[in-house]
Image (cartoon, rainbow, N blue to C red):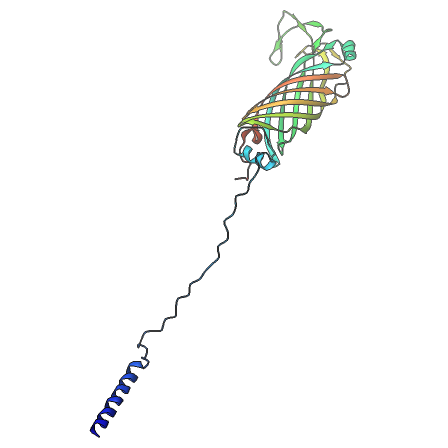
Length: 277
């Protein structure tokens, strides 16, 4: 009996101990339960592949030109105004044989000047003034005296002065002038221009700067349209041009002009245009 009682007590004790070890524990006071950390996974875009641009394509040639690399490059302007220039020239004007037979005037050299802009690196617009000084086979001379002051005081001894035959033209022209950049700073620009030259001072045979001297007007139809192929080499801010003008009507036959110009042309610089990076 006693053994049975002892076994029951031991069994009850073991059951109570098992229940106390396996029970749930209460949460700690003052500590908030934490949520488990969630890992976020983002899918990155694939790396961009470099785009291949053939060097012989238009886009490839423009990129080479913008970097200033040597080679033949066509400078295509990307703004309306792509150049400014002022040009000084010497021009020889030749006349139709019938005009020479009628007036005695033959071809001669004269000075000139031009102002111009380039649009889109292809279209030049020029305005200019030019003096014509032909050789005169029928010139005359007169005895003149020099006078100075106001009222004028004249010298007593006269001298002989020869006549001069000249005219002054105003011109405007435009056309096509693409640029071929041979190297950084060096550009070659062939052009085909169309223009009109009109006389503002007509041909007269007279003594220069003489008052009350003989003046002989000449019948000359000098105003005319013309076509002019030209070549221009530009080295940074300085250019040299050679052009031939063929007149389409009137008493002028043709003209050969050599010009020296100073200006700014993006096609020769090989630099980005305004507004470009």
